[in-house]
Amino acid sequence: MLTDEMDRKTLTAIFDRLIPADRHGPSASEAGCIEFIDSELAGDYGSGAALYLDGPLNPGNEEALMGSPQFLMPPRERYLTGLKALESWAQKNKQSPFHQLNNEDIDSFLKKWNPEVSIWAVLSTVRLFLS
Image 1: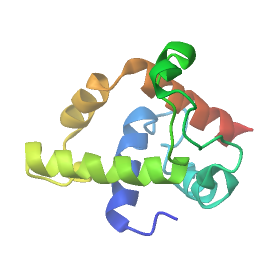
Image 2: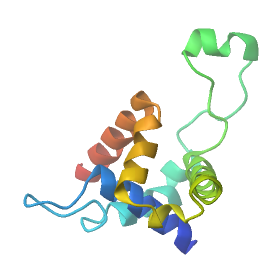
Image 3: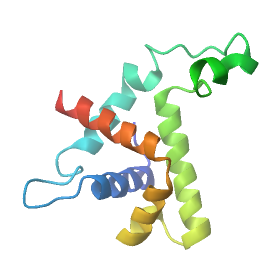
Image 4: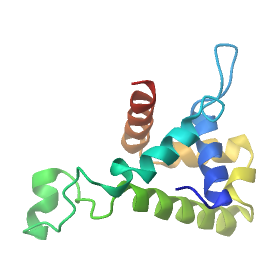
């Protein structure tokens, strides 16, 4: 699924900052998280097989009822679109591929990310990986 090498390197850079190698164990990429995400995106999860992806009946009420807009793209498309956008941001703002940014720049970017989204994304990924 992650056939673009740049996407793979970007995802590795992010995951390895969130779960770095230390004396207790390997980094996310060393533990196989990238391969796990890749296999999940290639399967039913990635295609959104269990998700309702049709548009809302009343878009005006959607955020009030759900608390946030409904995703209309399956996870695979969201991941790939997000990785491309992240690479574009790095090229524009840092004149470098994201995976070549130093740790401080990657950390700064991740800290500016919505903390609720990032912690849930990490917890969901770790939960799926460990189950």
